[in-house]
Length: 256
Ligand SMILES: NC(=O)c1ccc[n+]([C@@H]2O[C@H](COP(=O)([O-])OP(=O)(O)OC[C@H]3O[C@@H](n4cnc5c(N)ncnc54)[C@H](O)[C@@H]3O)[C@@H](O)[C@H]2O)c1
Image 1 (cartoon, helix red, strand yellow):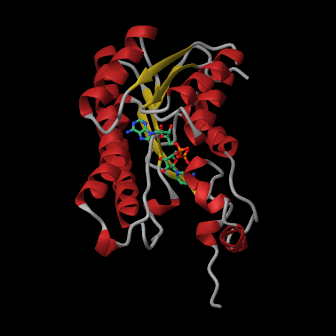
Image 2: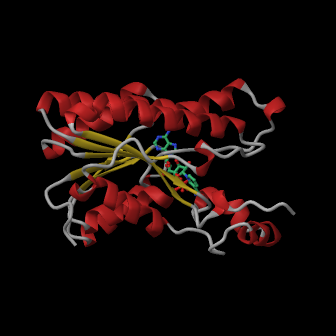
């Protein structure tokens, strides 16, 4: 496959889970990939090996996307290394369970800063570069079904992903005239380290599977395939949309 030959993709939080799967897939489509992590260098090294084996070039950049100057530096280093970039995947995200009444300011700030402020300023830095270079581009945010569906115990996470939904819609309108598309992917339950406690709790997992029409969790490959499409030239007319990838979870409603 070489749908992305000659393109450069920046994938935030690509040392693990969905981000790692996206980096691997985009590399297999021919893109050179900027791999980002904040804390786990080992995972980033593993991703680099995957990118290498796909025959593409990779660059690892350590940056905490919740810190504006680090997010800007990530974009800067990507453009410096490859001379240009075409695709930004805002994937890095965190969640913590906490009842609404017990949520502390520091937890609220951490989740909002990684999940919403990070994509905001990374995208801003990327669009400044694209604008200066007079280039079109692709922004893909990994949101969640919780950009739309309630999730009791995760109010901050829901607020961050709901914010990401409106950011995407607004930017699709603002950046459309420059040929920059902006879309969200809203995964349901995907098998990644983020869901470690769920994966280890069989009764809870079985109860969840009952609610998923396709009766399985999603894989990082399922999500990465959708990113590969949205990042490609074939998706040139797609912008302002959220793509659900949840095995039907958000459509399954029972009276009893
Ligand atoms: N796993 C799921 O079921 C699921 C469902 C819906 C949405 N998502 C979203 O998918 C994205 C990826 O989640 P995942 O399941 O792969 O989780 P994960 O925990 O495996 O990976 C998260 C990645 O984000 C990185 N990261 C965290 N904070 C960061 C920061 N401040 N700066 C840079 N990188 C940072 C981590 O290093 C890691 O690489 C998240 O945005 C998450 O909200 C996941």
